Length: 166
Image (cartoon, rainbow, N blue to C red; front, side, top):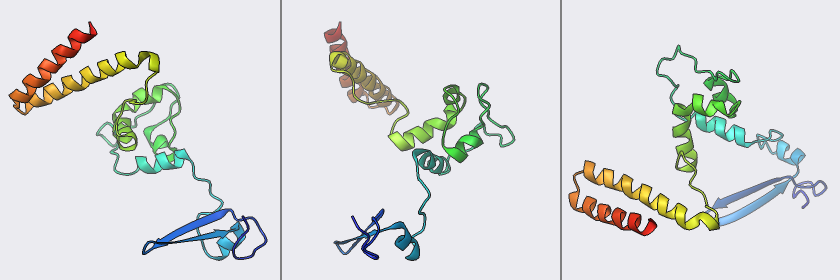
């Protein structure tokens, strides 16, 4: 696609503007985009930039005491280093920074534990296990909120599932 301003160079900047349900697209080369004052060109934006930005959005400094510097014993990376670049240094960092990473993972993925697809050959067993886990959590919540009728229904469902799986 050719730049809509100069008509010579290849358009690498594509802008879409929607005003009152009317969509307008503008395709520009980098030179014309810079002349128009469109900022942020030439600066690649990667996943680590996104993570670094999310980490700064209200994530508390770990360990309560601001003088304490949380550091991975394996790679010597600090939590502050992670906040700056959005990347962990090694697999041990996950354990070291677990307390601060969990809210971040929940913010990004909606959960701190992987809940993706399961293999077809193990799908039924996995689904049954997952359903049981969910039911046990619901049972605990129902008991805590003193919803005993609901708790009894959940208990009966758990017994039925356990009987089917054994």
